[in-house]
Image (cartoon, rainbow, N blue to C red; front, side, top):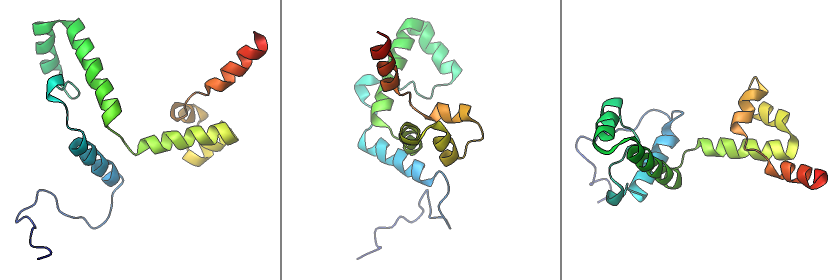
Length: 134
């Protein structure tokens, strides 16, 4: 019967409205469920505190930690997604088509310096310069 599979005391309950981070949390949970952290890559160093990192470094060395942490970070880059990526992509597209000032206006930034952080570099401009200069 519909509604009969509800939990008696759920950890999360519905709120009155959506908040700014609601979609981000939903996407985070979906990514975690779709792509669980691989056991063969353990330990997951992505959210370690200083004490845990220091213990790992004492046991395995700094180079081993750096190498493993880089692998973990690369895995997260491939298997996690955040809604801010849409903002970065839009900033880049608008900047390429209409210029950085248009992108700054669209994003609501007060300084162009902030917009440049969001905008991916346009390497095609460098290619054109190198083709012309030689």
